[in-house]
Image (cartoon, rainbow, N blue to C red; front, side, top):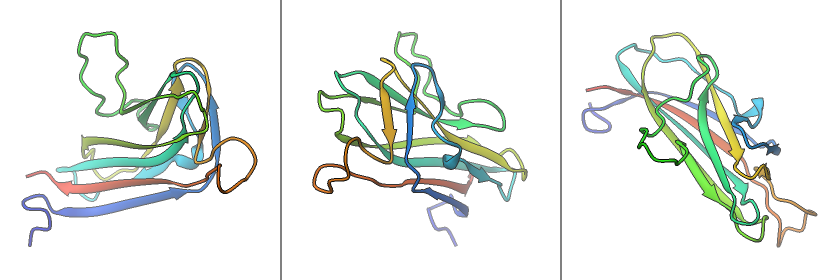
Length: 164
């Protein structure tokens, strides 16, 4: 019986992290090993839909942040947007800052890739700030005043679906 038309869900992998992490760099790099998720497909003829959902604060002065799903096992960024020939950075999820650097934004990164067989691969989140600004993931700056500051968690999912 089909759960999603002709593309049944075969397996769901789930990971959650409540850890707070900062990253300050103008080059792509891992936010934290706490965001790593191990994915082991059941079949070699399926598709894997990867999804990361997490908040960060917006950087100050309208600088850009970029967030990508990263394949640790193969040292690659899976399923980046096509190269348009423009000067824009290829990314799974861009965000632009505001003058108040503590404002939150929720990122939803997605990538779909063909199954690689039945061996395990590790995925994580890489990010950078174009202006080398400090970016807080899963938390905001300042004192713990619940009316102003926030904390949250990162969710990661890998859905294995039939490729029909």
